[in-house]
Picture 1: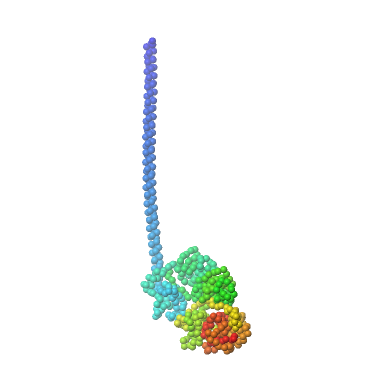
Picture 2: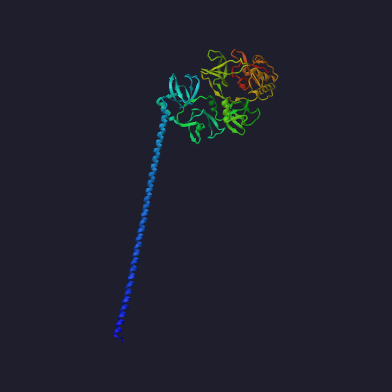
Length: 549
C-alpha cells in the first residue's frame, strides 16, 4: 500500500502528465487550424491574383482593339487629308498653268492667228508677188501692226512683213483660239542646231536643222534632250516654256534639205547609176542617173544598196560611202550645194528678153526642168538657159512669177530617167546607139567656152563635134554652121544621135544638143551645169537635123 505522500506525488505527476498531453494536443490543434487558415488565405490570394490577371488581359485586349480602331481611323483621316492636299495641289497647278497660258495670250495686244492648211507666206511687201521672207504654220500667231488693203503688216518671231488678211482671224475669236494653242514649246536659242532621230550625238542620226527662234512642241524631256514631234534637240540650245507658235524666218537652203527625211547625196563627179534591182547587171537594169551632188530619199537599206526615191525615179544605188553620203555628211554637202531654182508648174512658160510683158517671147520652157536663178525681180525672175558658144552669146531670159506658174526656191538636183540604148541587130540603129552611149560617158565634165575636149571641157558645139568625130562624122565648129549639115526632120522622126538646135532672141542658132532617146538630150549646157542630160524641149527648138544617115 502506498503511503499517502506517495499517492499524492503519483497523483500530481499524473495530473502534470495529463496537463502536458492536453497542452500538446491543444498546440497541435492550433497549429492545424493555423495551417488551414494559411491554406485558405493562400487559395484566396491565388484566386484573387487569377481574377486580377484575367481582368488585366481583358483590359489589354480591349485596349488593343480600341488602339487598332483608332489607328485605322487615323490612317483613313491621313489618307483623306493627303488626297485632299493632292487635289488642292493639282487645282493650284492647273490654275497656275491656266494663268501662264493666259499671260502668253495677253502678251499680244493685237493678236492674229493663222487659219490655213500648211503654210502662209510672209512677204516683204503687201503684194502677192513680193519676196517671201518667212513662213507661218497653221495656228501660228502674230502681232498685227497695221493693215494695207487685204494685207496685215505683222511682227511674228524673227519676221516682220505682210500676210494676206483672208487667212487670219483676230479679236476675241483669235484670243480664244490662241488660248487652245498655248503649249510647252522648245524655243531655239542657237543660230543652227541639229534635230536628231535619237537622243545621242551621232554623225548618222541627224534628220533636220532647227534655226534661231524657231519653236517646236515638246513631246517629252530627258536628261540633256528635248523630244519634239520631229526628233530630239539638245537642251543646251533651247528654252522650254509655254508659248505660241510664231513665224519662221525663211532659210531656203534649210527648207530644201528638210524636204528629205532620210537624205542621200551622190558623191560622184558625173552620174551615179540607179538600177531597178539591188544588183549590178551592167546596162540591162539601169533606169536612171543620179547627178553629182543630187539628192534622194532613202526608203530601204539592203546589203550594199540603198533603195531611194529621187524625182520621179525609184530604184537602187550603191551604198558604198565613196559614191553616196548620208547623215550629217549628206546634210553638209546639201547645204553647200542647194541653189536657187525656178521650178515650172505649167506645161509651157514664155521666156522674154526683159522683165516686161511688152518684151518679145523668144522661147518657151518646160515643166520637166529646174532652171538656175540668176536674180529675182518684182514679179519676174531671170534664169539661166544655156551658155551659147561664147561669153557674149548669152541672152537674158526672164519669166513671170505673177501667175504662180513658177516656184522660186532653193532646191537640190534630183534623178534623171535614163536607160542606156541596147545594141541592135540593125547596123544603122546600132551605130546610133553606140554614139549615144559614148556621149553620155562625159556627163558631168566641165563646160568651157570655145573648148573641144570631152574630158577637160567643151562648149555645146565642141562637145557634139568631138563625139561625132570619134565615129567618123565630120561637123563644122559652130552650132550655126552645124545646123546646116544633114537634113531637117520633125520631132516625131527623131532618133538617137540626131542633133537639136536652139536659137537666141534674134532667131539665130546659138546652142546644140544630141538626142539620146526617151525624150532626152545630152549637151554642154553652161559653166554652172557642165555637160548634162535634159529634156529635149527644155526650151523651144529652132531646128532638128539628122547628120548620121
